[in-house]
Amino acid sequence: MFLYKKCEVCGNNINKLQSIWNIYTLKIGETLHCSHCGTYYQTNKTIQAFASFYVNLGLGIILWLILGICINVCIHTLDISINKNISLILSLVLSFVLLGCINCIIACVIPLHKTQTPKEKRKKPLLYWLCLGLLAIVLIVFVVGFLGVTL
Image 1: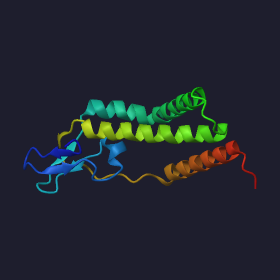
Image 2: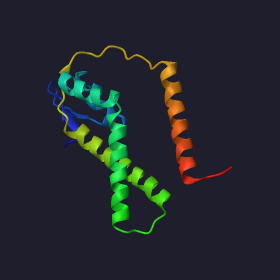
Image 3: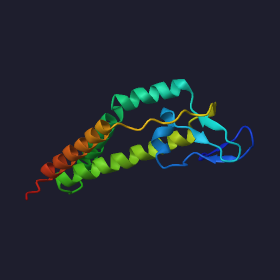
Image 4: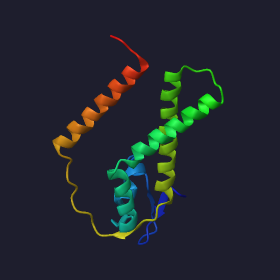
């Protein structure tokens, strides 16, 4: 029953994963809505502050890279015969999956409390999406260059 929050007003079970993105956004202040009685639930301000600090500094990406490098070192220590470029990509994918599982566990056990009706969400500005797209292009070029793919 970790994936459900029991509504304090009506006793209805609220699915914590109403959206798949709640795995990542629940800890930074995303609200859950009880469809039966209309009550909203959210994490407390202390957890939101720590999670925002973690997200805004990019510590998740740093942790992902460190974990990927550690998995890569373990692959080479076990003397598994895989191409070095492939083993690095494999270790980064495995570290991404592992951190996704950790985020899912955090979303399941995070405490939620009743809150007021949330204000209307602001849309992300166009500059945000352009920067995110540019970062994705840079990462793709890095991976292609690292693997040595030529056109």
